[in-house]
Amino acid sequence: MNGISSYEWDDWKWQLANSLKGINGLKTLLNLDTDIDTDRCDAIDGLKEVIKRYPFKVSPYYASLCRLYGLNFKNPIFKQIVPSLNEISYPPHPLSSKDPFREGELSPVPSLIHRYSDRALLLATAQCASYCRHCNRKRHWIEPSVPTLLNRRYREMAMSYLAKNKAIREVILSGGDPFMLSTESIKRILSMIRAIRHIEVIRIGTRAPVTMPMRVTKGLVAMLKKFRPVWINTHFNHPLEITREATIAIDRLLCSGLPVSNQAVLLKGVNNSYEVLKGLFTGLQAIGVRPYYLFHCDPVMGADHFRTTIKEGIDIMDRLWGKIGGLCMPFYVFDLPDAEGKAILSQNHIISRENGYIYLKGMSGNVVKWEEKGHKQATKK
Ligand code: SF4
Image (tube, rainbow, N blue to C red; front, side, top):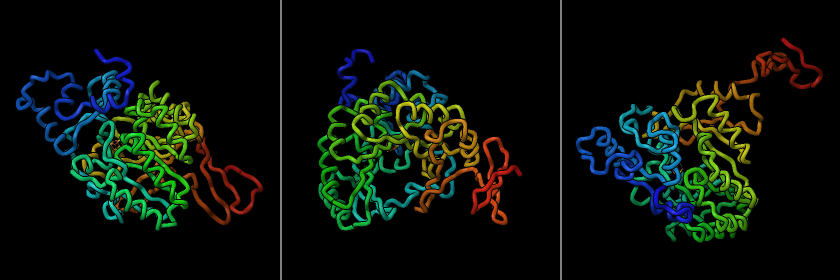
């Protein structure tokens, strides 16, 4: 950016303070004249309505990445951050809702979601470096008081709940993006969690390596390292996001003994193709990130237009199977509405099971017959 020193650019606090926000931030990103009469500009006028319901925000870093690939919806970065009229006009799926996973109901104390018996999720903050248009918690963007761990009372209530529930062995720090908190604040939360002896593992969900990689400072990773085992889950959706800056951020985490995995979302017009997902999964493996989940786009209000068919997702994953290494292959899953948990979506490689034999589809399409109980031989059907 013109007139910005590299010192400023590399400072995550500068990035946060200079985020593009609201209608003026959007106009800056789109290179629209700020003097434009927005009341006479249909497109912007419509987007003002979208932004009222689902705000716009992007970090200067991610905005600059977006500009590299064109200011239009063919650009996968643009599509992830620029509001679309579809968010308020696309016919919603009958099961779509603001809170499809009933997180509100599964919250025994503010800022804590307890959905699976051995895991609990903590809402560290509602802030993010950029607002992703497909976000499944976009309802939080306009809630005036999302209960988060920033509130001291909620923090203490959450920790007391964790301490009392001894079946919980893993805590997921989520949000928003926990890395938007100061290193000191994250340290305070991690210290409180680590003081609970039955919590074995801490997981942190963050998109900072993608949308603001300069947040992954040496100071942050040095602090995180003290609380290992800490697993980092990040959220790359497209190979263009695997930049030099992102690679440095990932490398810092890995070199500090913090394993990194990735949860991508299958998004129409962003990554719903064999070539793009192949590039994403292999590109992630090449920088040491394990592709963990590919989510079918959640049934969340304001994101229905991003959803592909399940068939399309399964077909792409089936084509990838055998073409890229198993370490590159995430589970393709659908987080079911009504808090029903995740369903694995895959082409069934078991064709049939008859008379003690199992018939399995091989990579070339041939069917292999195998004894269920024994291991004598494999013959072609
Ligand atoms: S970073 Fe995560 S929580 Fe924040 S807007 Fe994007 S998907 Fe949602």
